[in-house]
View 1 (cartoon, one colour):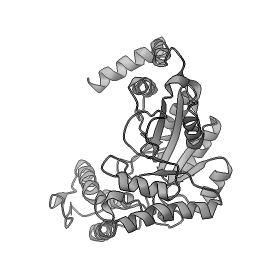
View 2 (cartoon, one colour):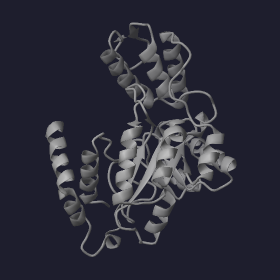
View 3 (cartoon, rainbow, N blue to C red):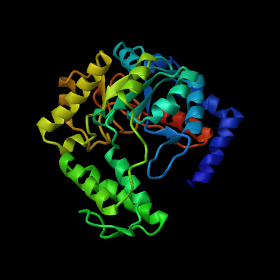
View 4 (cartoon, rainbow, N blue to C red):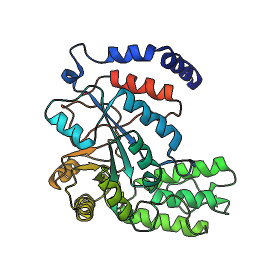
Length: 336
């Protein structure tokens, strides 16, 4: 179905009140507690402007979404949601809001919004980038491709050679393809290739998105924001040998606990698709002392869902009618 048609149908459902009727039908007649279904939303960056080389959610869109879920859902922290799941007492329409990586715009733009609507959130930190004054690898590559004066990207194994950079569309295509190539490289090789790209494209000093610092993390924690671990350097864990995989998991937990002086219960797998974690990785997460781990595998959850493979997702469309309609549609689908 064409996006314009979907938008029109969602607008009708949202404005006519039909969506509210459908939402009531989604909940079991015996009550949502008997069903125990819950959703976990995942975001990354949120800001007043979004660049295709640094993707994210517009702050105004995010605020509309938070206003909607505050009115229509029971928004819980991930810890509260896991406790309710353990006790088989999931509230009706339960939902949690999470963020991956730890961008500074969470402090600048997200914190005021979630305070305004009393939304508890969980942020998963890639701890090696916090207070390090360096970008994540994907941002370094995006900035280099966007701002280079070079006409092509070459010398990247696995990429069509050379990748032309003579138009904005070509640059975006090259960025997407470079991410695909780099994402599944072993950590040391990926960092070497990123440095080579930045060097070969001869870009000025980096001026893209920045990460949180520990002072901001501490302030957010004091205001009620919950933090989880997202590895140290954000590698795909299944690409690492067991010893390095363990260090990425355990060291990120330890770094946050030492800074905040409190236990860290939750972990997020970098990238988080089905190929990015396996049973061995889940066992390392459990062994490190985490009580849950979240993925980016799309879907809803119930108390029967593997606590070390919790599903996340969510509609990120700008139109609130589409966001709302899809939330309820996804919730109506079978969870396990």
